[in-house]
Length: 347
Image (cartoon, rainbow, N blue to C red):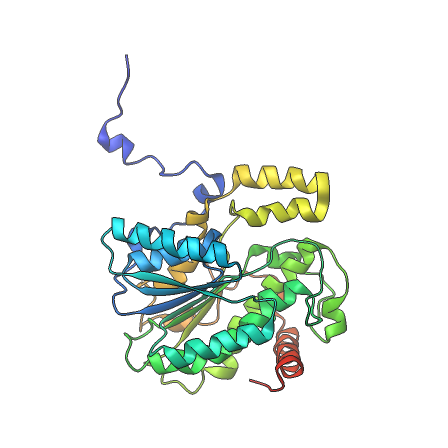
């Protein structure tokens, strides 16, 4: 005989069996407000967490632009996302643009193109990145984790920032937002991290530590944007900037444990995947930061520039290194110097 649980009991059961999700606060797709008329950009939006960031925003009726390097993956993601939107009767849309975040001139050109063609930009989620892969140097002579995860986003954000700031004049107060996809892995950044020179950044190192260092950099980038670039805005029309931890998430990034550490990495990858959130669940923190209406005119300053390890999380829980203002200044200055070296000008 098959037993059937009463509806009242079923409704009390968790909607996931993923351990990492059960240990985290939730921000589900239905919590996203209507985004009709708004425009969003998601870097790395063709796969993993970024894919579900794009899907969540577009299902809420936003027009979403995703950028990534692989044309086949990008065009397939665009087609799959738009098919899913039709099935839910959403008025949102997704458009893919190709750009390699390991090539700063390409990133600069794409950001300038978007800034010129778009009339508004309400939401920018900086999600693209290399995970705990082995050390490598790009064709432009920069350690690849740093160039893709940090420097490229520094340029991309600064090129789009005038458009983002302009959007505050026509958008609802506190709805214009920039989100950095950081991680609790920022705690893996080497204790010797100073962000003082290209030589320091390019030095060979452990994949997890190189990745962690860039997640530390994204926490710095969020705060420095607030401090250096947003003080001219009226308090009633802010651009809100936050960094978040998506949780341990089962995406293809986990394969990089094996790339970096062989058999030991394979074991770590297996355990991580078993315990991890799904990619859709991993998108919840960034979607919360990007859209939550519980962040509003009366409390937005409590969130500005802050790092959160989960939706509705407690701020100021990042590592001691992540709170070091001198190293944070070094990070910004190094990004500015390398940008000048590669692009011929500071932004």
